[in-house]
Structure formats: structure tokens, C-alpha cells
Length: 262
Image 1 (cartoon, rainbow, N blue to C red):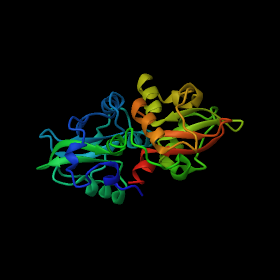
Image 2: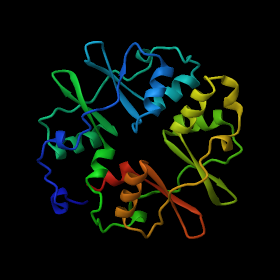
Image 3: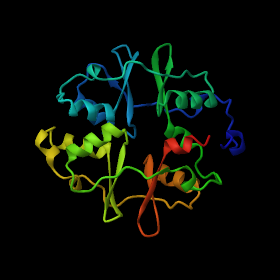
């Protein structure tokens, strides 16, 4: 564990100082396809859902959307029909340390910041990772990464890739061929592809190689976690494959792994 105060960060400081006070959000009456466009145009993987009065009524993630599409819901369905209604939130008066603990206990990667039941902002793992930028942590990536990560091949269908993501709850899947990593697929890659095809169900049977990102940011196990933090922040990504010098996949390091250090 790394103490925030050892990094020059006051754990008693109000969480509002690190929160995003201009978050993307959706209205409960909006359609699935409209919300996908909101998610794709933002850096967020979960967005708050509000009523006409701007009162918080739910949360929707792109994993929720993938699951809804797998269950046969149409692009026109209102997000109020499948969003998460039990919202864990934080308030402006709560400290950075308290909110971090709340996120860990609730197993949420982001919490709406609420004032008098109105949406004020959003606090996510990304915000905690940002406060570690350019701070030497003295911990090797290999010590905190998830070992033996789940991976796929480029020849499986996009439908199978979606099912794998929803069933495992892994938001990114490395693509491996002949023991070497050749790319990666994320939930946003799938949503972008489906949105571009106007949610034509036949495209789900195309091969994953058609949406795979071949040029992947990565780190090595011996590198300090601060290197992963820097790469994530500068490239706006939330997870990195960990590979050997021979391009063999050894693990995955995510924002969640990094916040667990704090």
C-alpha cells in the first residue's frame, strides 16, 4: 500500500478537488443509440442518468449496453429499461480518502458526485490515477498486474467477443495468435462498430479482426507503475497489456489495479 500523504496528497481534502465537474450524462428517456453516441464522444465508460429535473436516477455503463444488445433489445429502447437504479454516490463534503474506500467497498469504478440529489460531477478511478502523474511509486508493474489474462483470437466473431466481455466483465480483451499479442479489442471498439453499422445484427457475425486495434500501448513487468500511469493518462486509456520482450502476453494492468495500491 502507498499512503497518499507520502505522495504529497492530502487524504482529508474534499473529493470535489479531483472530481470532474462537467461530466457527460444521459436523460432517462433517451434511447440506447443516443447514449452510445454520448459515451463514444466522452472519455467515460459509465455515465450518470438523470431526470428532466437533473436529479440522479441511475447509472449506465457500456457493458450494460452490450448486455442489452445481446438480450435482443433494440437501439430505440429507453435506457431507463436497463440502467442500474441503485446508485452509489458521493457528496462534495466527503474526503478523497473516504471516497476511495467507498469505491473499493462498493466495487464501482466511478461514483456520481451529488448535491441535494442533483448531479454535480463524477469521480472515477481515472481521477485517482491522475493525481499519481509523474510521481515515482517504487512498485513494479508485474507486482500488481492481473496474471494470465483472458484473451481471444482474431477469428472469433464479434458476437462471441461481446459474449466473452459480458460474461467475464473484462472491458478489454487482448488478441493473441501463436502465443504473441497482435492487438486488442475494447467495449468501445464494439459499440463504435455497431453504431457505425446502425446496429445491423448481421455485422455481429463478422470476425473480431475487423474491429481490433493492432497498434497497442503496453508496458513490461519490470517497469515502475509510474510508467503505466503516465502512458494511461497521456493516451486516455484505462488499461495496458503487460508483455515480455518477445511480445508474449503476461498480464494486464488497469486503473483498478493502480488504485488498489492507495
